[in-house]
Structures are given as C-alpha cells and as structure tokens.
Length: 137
Image 1 (cartoon, rainbow, N blue to C red):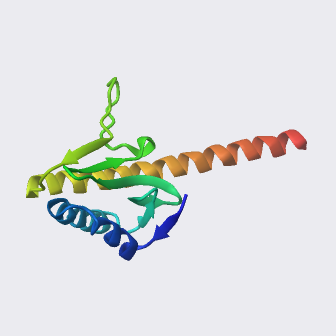
Image 2 (tube, rainbow, N blue to C red):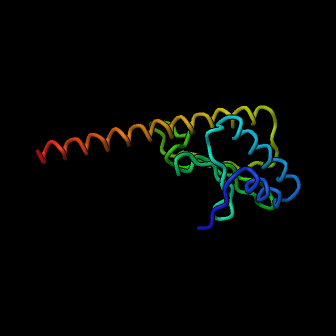
Image 3 (tube, rainbow, N blue to C red):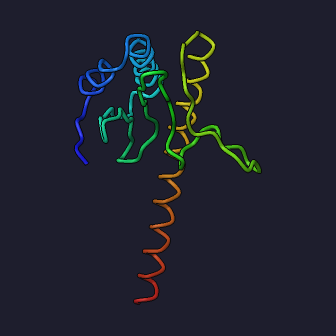
C-alpha cells in the first residue's frame, strides 16, 4: 500500500479527475480541511483519504462520470440507530451550498465519532490491562 501524505499529494491526485469533477473534488477537499483541520490528508490505493490516528474518516473517489464521497464504516455519521441499511458513500455530479453545508455537518460528526470510539477503545484497554495486573498480584 503506497501512501503519499499532505494537501499537495491529495490535490495532485484530484487534478487527475475530469474537469467538472476536479472542481468538486477540490471543493470537497477544502470543506474537509476547514471542517476538520485535525484530519491528515493522504493518497492511498490511488484515492484521497482523510485520517485521524491512522483510522479512515472519509475519502474522495473521482470517476469519469461522477465523484464519490464516503466515510469509514466505523465512524459513519449517517448511521441511524435501529436502521437496517446505512449509507456510507454518495455520488456527486454537482455541489451546491446546501450540499456543502450537509457535508460539513457529516464530516464534523464523523470526526466526533472517531474521537468517541478512540476514547472508548483506550478506556477498554486500560480496564483490561488493570484487570490483568490485579490478577497477577
């Protein structure tokens, strides 16, 4: 898995997209970076990803007929309790102000879920380590 890091690498990858989707990709990149500056932009598997502590938060996938934008399943901000299906990606053929606003909300929610999940995993690890230590004593 070859990885390039940074805004320049992601923008260079998005520049390879067909003209109408190149602009959408660049706008998505800007929305993500403004909404979640703590995310690290990388290019992996030929796609722009945005990660936090090595975990995928969201990605952009250019195509010749559309551009796809999606989230890692673990932090999926569109997941609804009790639902049997959960969208994790959307295809975009244009990008208006209302859609930009919705994407900003989804990105912020995904990052918050990522932090919440990381905190839970850290607490679980601590409890497991603590129990193991108590058992050893």
